[in-house]
Amino acid sequence: MSIQPRPEIRLLDRRTPPHILTLVLVSGLAALSLNIFLPSLPSMAAYFGVDYALMQLSVSLYLAMTAAIQLVIGPVSDRFGRRPVMLGAVGVFLAATIAALYAPSFAVFIVARMVQAAVATAFTLSRAVVRDIVSQDEAASMIGYVTMGMSVVPMVGPVIGGALDQVFGWKASFWVLAVGGAGLLALIWADQGETAKSRSASFGAQVRQYPELLRSRRFWGYVGASTFASGAFFAYLGGSPYVGTQIFGLDAATLGFYFGAPAVGYLIGNFLSGRFAMRVGINRMILAGAWTTTLGLLLLAALEFAGLSHPALFFGLTVSVGLGNGIMLPSANSGMLSVRPQLAGSAAGLGGAITIGGGAALSALAGWVLQTGGSALALVMLMVASSALSLVSIFWVMARERRLRQG
Image (cartoon, rainbow, N blue to C red; front, side, top):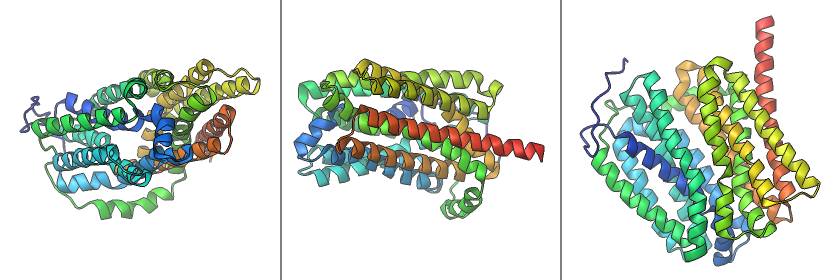
């Protein structure tokens, strides 16, 4: 079906598609909900009277729920429309945030935290909205603006969260999320017109396409590169709050300042990807990104092993994680979609679910390793192992392509 000329877009007019500002803000809330409270994890563990490894489940289980949502949200929005699903997701997020604030126990809090993952639909639906209203080439540019807006949040979120924790306690970050959720619910109601002009019941058809993808070794190679590269970052999310507070003795505000270091690298990596991906090719971009992360982490591991352990070195060198991910992930995602172009939607959902699910597992593993007496070096080595597996994955794809060319 051909895409119609781009419709007129007016801010705060729900008869037209949503303004790009709305898409940036909603996607930003999804990113903020993942990281604003991370500097508070140790104080939250003390508040609920649980071990850090249990408190860290607020990250890993959130990611696991996000992975599950990736599988279904596209078909659901195809069936019921983008506007009602976005409104419902943000509404559920708001209710879950309030429940987390008033949770009488850790069990109630963790359930509320898992339900908060409903807002993770925001970025997926933002991309779907863009694809509804503009051509493929313009969609890449418009999605780029949304992504750039999102990339600022990981830099400022932990800084804000750490400062709020220092002054008001951990609940202040969740009050920020609640106010943001309420404001964005009103904004979506006033601004987001429906962009899905047809309705389908495509979930069953999408699931039936998964076996064809799962039989593709190229698909697994690109998914492996994405999963293990992202896994290094998710292990950082799961373990660095403990390293910062328990090993380096940082207060929440200082930890928040250091914590956003990988996001700086990610912003630069995204720029490099946009500038060079078409010229260099996706496989070599993935390889470059994987080497960037792995070598940076190996240098950090060597310094830790030599006893040169300092928060500036630890967090400074984790910039390589964000830089490498920013360089490689756009190309890895493109590779997933190119394996079976006619199954691009299924590949996006399945690949995203595997990537985030793997990240959830590594995030939980990082918390467990540190809680059982691990050091900063133990976390770094876990990240090195994950990044090295991303190198193995892309080498496998490239070796297979060489064999096909020669045979």
